[in-house]
Length: 436
Image 1 (cartoon, one colour):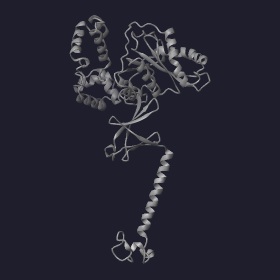
Image 2 (cartoon, helix red, strand yellow):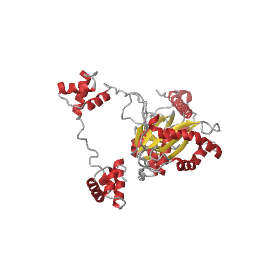
Image 3 (tube, one colour):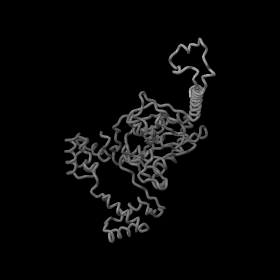
Image 4 (cartoon, rainbow, N blue to C red):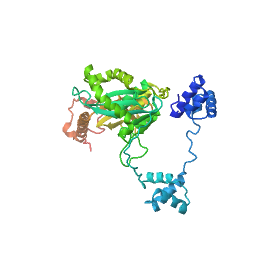
């Protein structure tokens, strides 16, 4: 399947495969895709003619017809900044239409003012009542994820965090993994195992932890975390809950696990993270048999990952962009990374390279989709190398200076010295001549 296909298009491909195989009819396909039977016929014709590429939208890469022209947007921002900086979006939109003949909707003006820093979104009223939300219909439509720090080993080992992936439709535990702390690479490891076991979910539902979104004030709205970048490349939607109650499925599961799991591990004699992670699959199967429910729709919403294992590992890694110096090195985490190459390496001077930190502890350096070997020098090693380099250079400079400044009169060779028989290195004049 093409990596450029979006979730909606990939879903259409699955439905068209079922329809072509005769497992469903056109009416059922229309219900699954929420389109008419007439539209199903058109989609099926494109699928039979062009295959999966025929399902990709033809509008891909084109500018929307509803997009505001850049000149109008620039003029509007300028007018608002000069005259309506302290106006509300509604009044600013009215004045732009009345006085400047710029007709924009109130929502467009509001977004322009927010982007320019002239308007701050107002928070809604605090909701005290949290009504029950209906489960999703299919397995894999929504996977709730969370980290639960707890004394899982009851004092037999240090406190750690349990990363929990639970399906919203069925209540199944899809992935459990112990980690020392709640980290980006820990979640990437759990997501990697989930994709290998089940496939790509439609959406992930998490809290507003800094692993999943950037919470800094004044941050670029389009900026994303390493985990957000990975899920975007995989085509997985990320939804951030506004309250713990919104992701009650995983919160309730954490309470149940904190009660049951330590006791189960005590009985099994588990006292470390590595042993617990190897033991967890059996516990998950037992938990799901007891607590999982049947979904409304038996069709699995997971999609098999179309790429290779190496591609998946590279996507689910912390990617750090670096710029090489003239000697093909850069600093990272107080260490000096020196790239090893076979040639001169002139083309790599100033190159933008990417350092991949994988969840298994390995690290790979890439430039233009090629791997490069490197050496790592710690701060102490760097000081030692610099000191050795300085001592060698200083000895060489002293020798050169002494040789160039010494008066030859005080070092006249003897009559039988071999130097008198050599022509290379002797001054053109008599040896008594002093070099200026």
